[in-house]
Length: 327
Ligand SMILES: Nc1ncnc2c1ncn2[C@@H]1O[C@H](COP(=O)(O)OP(=O)(O)OP(=O)(O)O)[C@@H](O)[C@H]1O
Image (tube, rainbow, N blue to C red; front, side, top):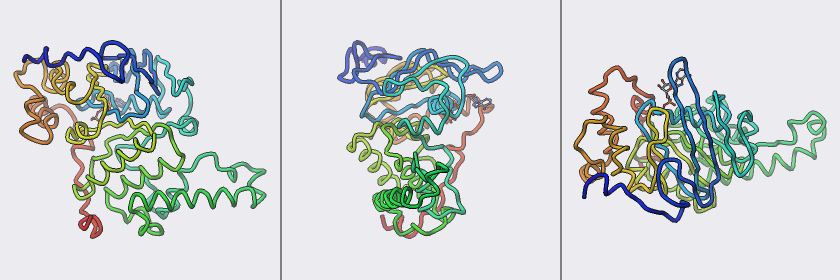
């Protein structure tokens, strides 16, 4: 079968009509239109139409500089687009600041973790709770009003810390955690606000292999609990193992999307990673090694040494803790 034949997917249960870049979903949680972001002469994001399916795990992949993190920043209010609109759960969120986006039920984590090292693990968790009554001046004067909520937040934090096996670290400074544990803390903190959609930016970068399986398990559990997951990842092992749907960006645009098994064979995806002149199939590469797209990226990087290294590539995983080694 040729590449172009293998890439054709006529329909899919998650999709209305034909599968392809920007295709309509049966039940989308995010719908974005004409979203662009220009940095000087560079159009970092140029997404005509994108829909994210509700209740599923969607991977956003693409070579370095494709615009994935910029798209995350735009959707979550951490950056402003030049043009574009988008809806989350039927409500327009374009121009809405990040803290309000989180309150609306859409939270994200960052490529480089943002835990506050001089606060305890528990304090970091409590910062993730949204809509705290004690934040309002009048309410803050009346202890009974905020104490009950504080107790509820602490109970939720303890529950999540236990789920993420961080309960033993509850009182430790976040700075004392390993890189992998910080990723878990960031994911657990994002869940404090009970989001409908969690967006994870390179959850595997810097994570020691000892924690990889539990991280994958946590992400699958999020889906089982009814949370929609959208994640950016270079680790193709993870992408193919846990995602229901894959969206591929290159040079700011959505160039392909589909279920993981067919999207890896799509000529547009191979072009995006390898450049236009190639005779390899990412589907074939997958048979030989765990990270075919990383391999393709390595080749592209050799051909284009001017491309900067991303933090995800350069990061050295922090050595595993004793607990991680046992896990
Ligand atoms: N604040 C900024 N100022 C100028 N250029 C930027 C800025 N942020 C991103 N860019 C550029 O926009 C393009 C898209 O970057 P972005 O980080 O979104 O890509 P990415 O797909 O997330 O890449 P990676 O996989 O390496 O994280 C890149 O060329 C990048 O250099």
